[in-house]
Image 1: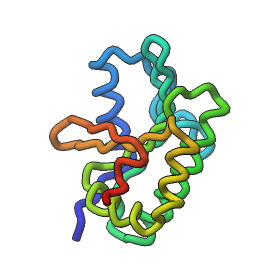
Image 2: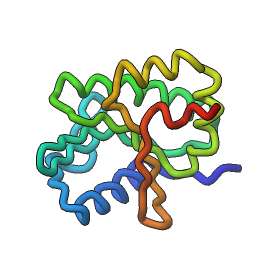
Image 3: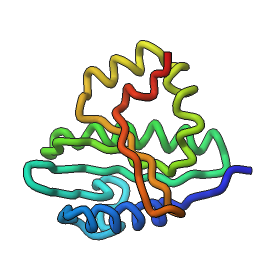
Image 4: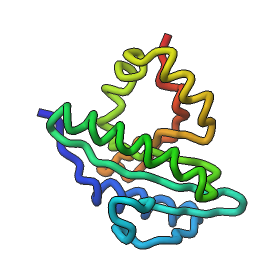
Length: 140
């Protein structure tokens, strides 16, 4: 059974790392609820709008979370985001290539249509994260 990572653990880890990197966090954890962005982080001209999800044991629940977070992330463009980030637990990297392959050209076109869209993989155990672009997950 895959290890579960709660949304708040993923968000807390990422907030800590961003502060260490000199980002100013403009909102409090859990302060915006279902309709607001999870993390707004600024540094210089960068304005990151980050949507965070955890890792659930149920594959259908993980899929539902991913699709919902995608639409929340791209909707942040209207709010002045220079980068729209989907922050997932590092464990999610196992299924992302398969998900991207499944959608193929549609996945690629989404990445082209939304160049600000990124996927970050947060490792709550190692206290680190990896930044990737949307289309990096399209493995030939």
